[in-house]
Length: 447
Image (cartoon, rainbow, N blue to C red; front, side, top):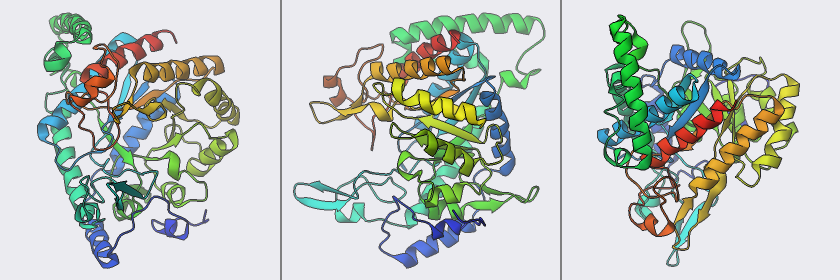
């Protein structure tokens, strides 16, 4: 890494998984226009999230980071609302049943780019660039649709801005009021076994709220009952986009990537001498870094030193994606190394990416049981190491999809054909998401 950081110093390092833009002039113009647009989030909000994550770091709260695998430019307001509703349902379950304050961070309002294992894809003898998320190209399989188009960077900005406006309206305008917990239990969640369990919990919360209201405590006197803090995050993959939205805070003089409150580095781009580490080490946002089964203790300590040399609690979240079969052996050495180094980190589990497989019908899917098994292994490893299992990072949707097998409804591989709608990786639906929250709440009760 270079010793002097600037928003563009990443250009001196190797930047992996960047699109091959066919028109450099088009890219330069898009980046210039982006750099002149208002920030999507503000430095003070990012600092608030760092403070909340510091509580997670101390074992005083739990992180729920959840949302779409890859957002679509065609997402409707109803779909955004339903996704938020599922996340809020999970948060209520974890808070009420797990007895733990929740920090809520969405994979939303910016999760438009996806790294791929291969730069090209072949169908019926035709080879084209892989789909890299709608911020780069389109999911359709034609030369025009798969051509990287830099004007999509601007479309992504405007889609993120409109999504953020809607999220802020929902989370501060009454939709997130605790008195609405019962009304969130609708449609496919309400008709499921998990929905029945949720309804019982909602009734208990309603009774508690009525008692509090009788004592003079309600959403008018206590804003925490009426609104929630909700933050955004995405993988900081496209460095041209991230640099263009980086701003210097007028209060502190520090640099913030104002495309989201929290940014993370993927397993494929966490090289210590790479451009992604170089870029993100200089912004003051809270950061995440995905850690896979090949990570060594030395590499993880190196990441801590590079991304959080000042050892600020809440600055760095290590997101483990080991796989259910490897969590028991892969995670403990990393926990011990970071614990003994004294680095303050939030440990979170991504139980999705290490448990993906291809079903007999060719659909990429994930097993709910293996997702639960990895989370259980994550909690067990922390219990043995004497460290705090600080959170979970999951891909989900509020839509009634059938993309992951298992869960309370017992979806099998044949059901994948019913509503398989993801543009990239399989997501949990609402029933499965709330089911998972109840199971994690039980794990929290054990700690």
